Image (cartoon, rainbow, N blue to C red; front, side, top):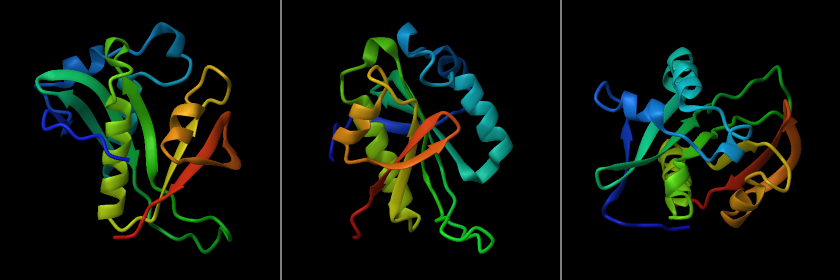
Length: 161
C-alpha cells in the first residue's frame, strides 16, 4: 500500500482551514454512507486525544478529510475484546474521488497507528453493493463478522517494522 506524491499531505484542522473543511462534500449518493465533516469535528472535540482529525491536501487543494481513533487500552472486564484503533471517518470531495486520495489517507492512518505501537487497524462501514466494502478490501481489510450498530467491522493487520 503506497501512494506517494510530495504534494499529498495530511494537516490538522486549524482556524484558517475549518470553513473549507466544513464545506467539503462527498457525492450526493454517498451522503447516507458517511457522516459530514461537521459531525466528525464535533465528535473529535468530545473525544479529545483519542480522535485524530486531519485534512487531506494535494498541494494547496483540499481534497478530503480523514479521522482516526486511538485506543490501546486493554479492558479486563471485556474478555476477548481487543484494543481498537482505526479509521473513524473518510470523506473525499466529490470532484476528487478516484485520484488515490482515499488510499493515501488510509495509508497515513495506518502509519500513524503503527507509529503509536498499534498492530491492527479497524474500520466500520455501511455494508452493501454501493458502499465502500470493495475499496477497503482492495486495501487489505477483511470483515470480522462483527457489526457496530448498522456498520460492518473490518480490520487490517499491520506489518511489524
